[in-house]
Image 1: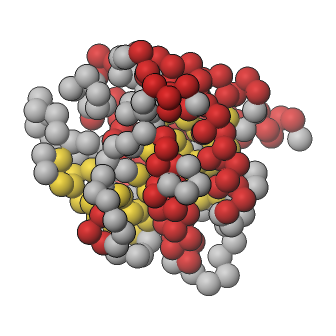
Image 2: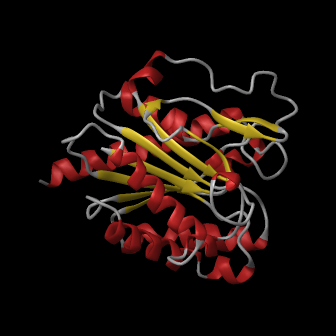
Image 3: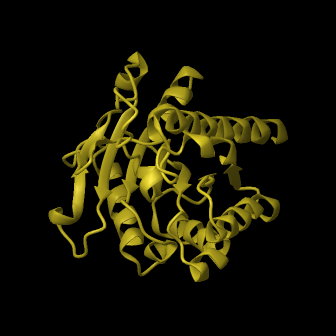
Length: 254
């Protein structure tokens, strides 16, 4: 099962909290059992290696932190605790693919946007790196985005996320039954309130969507925008719990 993470800076996972002495997610023996592939994109324009914060070298490695830049010595986001939670629950044969961006509104994830193409290309590279003959399906998209949405983008954030999932299900291999795990944003602001409203409404009309509310983590935004270490770990665990609960519900319905 492949899990695909995308979004902006709280998906990328910043580490510039001045109050945090240990910016790492800590050590966990489970990390070595969780395959991981990433290509994290900066806000620089253009194409090619220069626009990347870093990648896994085109190979599948074990779950770990990623190359940082500037004030962020490392990047790591909800993928760490997400993978650990699934592994601890006994979920096997998983791979996490990360294609996150340093910032930007949801227009970047429209089908003609740079992030849409980046996600598709990253997933294709990741599954191509699997051993020949490996069966896989894309189990879920993990999406953490919205802090930078303009008013216009915020008002269509729900519809654009629905369309993003629809497009990815068509353009990615073995993604027809993919679930969508939405990590809600916590930062304050009128546009962000709109984003929260639109994203949180999606599960009511589409059972493949699952929304994780993070408003209780607002006090853990170290700069009123970015999740601190503790909040990133909690978000990852709660997104994993949302997927596990969805799987239990589906199993009961069979």
